Amino acid sequence: MACAIQVSDLTKSFGGLLAVDHIAFEVKRGEIFGFLGPNGAGKTTTQRMLTTVLKPTSGTIAIMGYDLRKAPFEAKMQMGVVPESANPYLDLTAWQNLMLMGQLYGLGKKRRRARAEALLAFFGLSDRSRSKTRGFSKGMKQRLILAMALIHRPRLLFLDEPTAGLDVQSARLIREHVVDLNGKGTTVFLTTHNIEEAEGLCDRVAIIDGGRIVAVDRPAALRAALRSAQSVEVVFDRGLDGLESLEALPHVTGVKKAGEGYRLHTDQPGEVACLVADLARAKKRKILRLNTLGPNLEDVFVCLTRKA
Amino acid sequence: MRFKWQVRFSLAIAKKDARIYYLKGPVLIFGLFFPLCLFGAFVFGRKISPTLLMPGLLGMTLFFISSSATPVIAPWEALNKTLERLVSTPASVSAIIAGDILAGFAYGILVSLVPLGVGLFAFGLTLVRPAVLILTLILSAVCFAGLGTLFSTLPTTIPSNIMLLSNLVRLPLLFISGVFMPLERMPGWGKALSVISPLTYTCDLARHALLGRGYFSISRGLVTLFVFAVAFVFSSIQIHKKTMSKRLA
Ligand SMILES: Nc1ncnc2c1ncn2[C@@H]1O[C@H](COP(=O)(O)OP(=O)(O)O)[C@@H](O)[C@H]1O
Ligand SMILES: [Mg+2]
Image 1 (tube, rainbow over the protein chains, first blue to last red):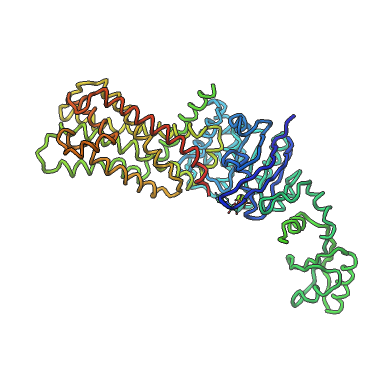
Image 2: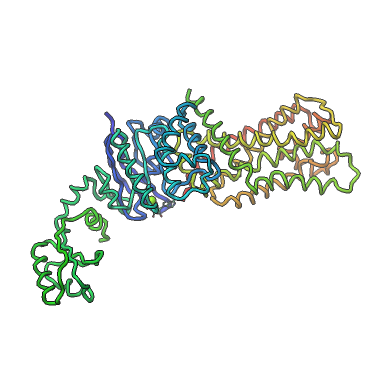
């Protein structure tokens, strides 16, 4: 069976700027595939090419086995799209927005209505279905946009920063629904710069930076690949004056303020934990918490996207 | 089969356009208010029989209305961030533009029934050639709505820029199209220029249909309008295919 998405040698240049630089990857059916990278990395440009909105400068894309250039209609019928910072039509009601999308994917009237009702109920918008979306909060709009992308029950869902700037409830509802859909077999392509989101949701993650893919793997494997990025987290009863005393410890490669405590990067977490305890005694601080941590996806991300 | 789908998509898009764009301020001002004021300014205080002016008013209304919203739909969608999703649906660019044209067409015909009705029932105009009138309205509405989408090929996300461009073209066309003055009374250079304006043929054909006389032959008028309509629709679709994505920031 063909992959959900198969991309080879994909490139997009805007004038002189190479926004996407010869990337290749595959998304298997049934995965949640994360597309993670800093701002300006080329994530949105890639998603736009995958959803036929932008024409690639070179390269090929196959969606569910359909070549995007030769069979765009068939390919588009398979996908639901949530573009980056999109809006519903503000002068239409939630219901009218859903009906329009149903029509644009060729759904008959009965089906459109039944699905729209179910989606509105699921996303908690039923009681506002007849109001114009101009008055909706950002979270309500985004929930509606996801509902609009789902009305034709796509087998492949594209999401570009779907939870960026949302209230906690809306973001959580959207994440839960993505997981739920995935459980029912929908493949998800999730573009995000939110590392926790990628780590929490994705089966595999591609890390993109400067238009190039620097790694593709399961979050756990990416983490394991980076033994050097282990760390020690410590919380004292009172803060230290500055980070210098921690930075001066042997084996410590970097120190960051992390919440109420500090995070010390090192390749020797055991050793550093002892040194921190000595330091606390010397500085007359009590240790409230001391943990050694493996690398999280953020460390991998920072390491891989660090400018040389 | 595929074609039937795309026709349905066009209808859905036309319905959306009608719901959203035809009640927007700039569209109402430049589509309705503006031609009415022009007409008033021309007629007031003169001894011209309104009957003689009705074909011109009809043509001008159709012209302004059909081409009023179509130019701004694409930039408006880009500005409001609805364009990307629309382009990612199975509706082709041709279906999207055809839908926009269809909305302009329907709106133009609908509104121009008002001056037509006033002319027929209040000023005692007679419908000399109904078939010519129907064909003229249909061809002209497609032609003007198509002209509107041609303006919107300019890949900007600022609707007022396109409003500016469209009025820069539409207003001068009024003067060379024999709207208020029959072509035979225009100076030589005016006549020469008038042939490049589709509105010329609309007004001339409306005179044939309502007054029983015109400057060009009926067949020449209809064929020319048809050619203009096909050229505008075809070229705007071709250009939109290239520029649609340039609007996305
Ligand atoms: N339409 C465009 N025209 C010119 N440059 C663009 C366009 N879209 C994106 N870019 C540039 O391409 C690069 C990648 O952008 P984008 O794909 O939006 O990044 P991301 O989504 O990862 O933040 C950026 O440098 C951006 O400025
Ligand atoms: Mg982006």
